[in-house]
Length: 371
Ligand SMILES: CC(C)(COP(=O)(O)OP(=O)(O)OC[C@H]1O[C@@H](n2cnc3c(N)ncnc32)[C@H](O)[C@@H]1OP(=O)(O)O)[C@@H](O)C(=O)NCCC(=O)NCCS
Image (cartoon, rainbow, N blue to C red; front, side, top):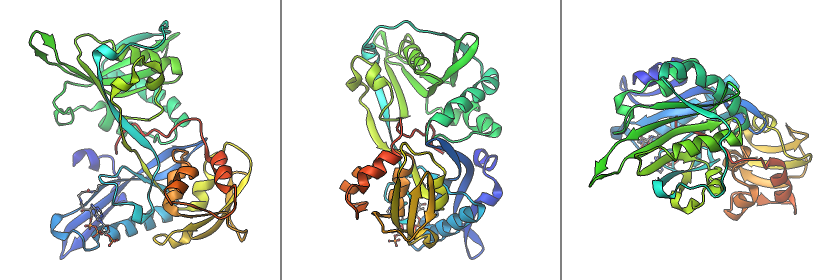
């Protein structure tokens, strides 16, 4: 509770009341979320819950109503969340916008496909140094990666550096390692050991909490370090994007036993501002006809042209519910894939390809942390 109350502005928490008692709640962190080529103010939806005594009578629906109206009034073009269950949020206009997965890699399969010379040096640091040294590195990395969100100083202290026992899930304290080149920190990793020894050999786990680098070499060298720590039987990590370089770096990537699921979900709160807030991969235009029952101010036709979206009377080319736009916005789900799932209708031949050329980005969205 303390962890959330320290970070969540009180005015961003909605409560549902019945006979003077709170029976449900929903909060929103005020984030800035990286979108392709830019960033947008975003309601980072969190701590959604309804008491079991009051479930399935519309409490969540009323909370979503209040929360999205509030985000709209505040001028946040997007809302984003991690869903506890995939079935809950589509009805409120959230679309699955990224995929991510966990790996469980046995230490004997950590060889790289190609030999390479590590470029930098690694240094273990204490959390006090991490608190000062790591945030500026993350700040440099974040703009390139759609799906990453801003972390305030308090967020760093409370969520990343603080390491209470109950968040360790049976493993040891967080270790911080930095990767340096020419005296500059160009990457870092946070990880934990879960030590163990059985029948004369190690059965320990190394859990990578977060590993990020400012360059491909930095990320590669960090992982080379993480995968080579002694006395480890298994390396585990979570929330890795499906285009993570490890798939191409490792000699036997299947051995990661990658298990993919949904990552963050995106809800365009203001379709015009959301579409205008990112950069596009080509010139060109497209006319959307958007259905949005829950936030009717978004309904109707929008022309995206020259990177800006405006209300329009042009003939619609793609017909879609707002959650499909949420899925496509960060470039993580293509319009072609949405079409195959019946989530967008092509009204003008070629419009799907044109939209995909516009929305494509150089990497899959990556949100490295569940909020
Ligand atoms: C999920 C939860 C918040 C739903 O609250 P609720 O007040 O029962 O939801 P509502 O009555 O407002 O339901 C709104 C709609 O969502 C549907 N719905 C609600 N929970 C659902 C679930 N878990 N799976 C599928 N559909 C669900 C309802 O059937 C209803 O559908 P309708 O629009 O067709 O009528 C509540 O059950 C809960 O607290 N669960 C445990 C905590 C949790 O999972 N929180 C989410 C964190 S991301």
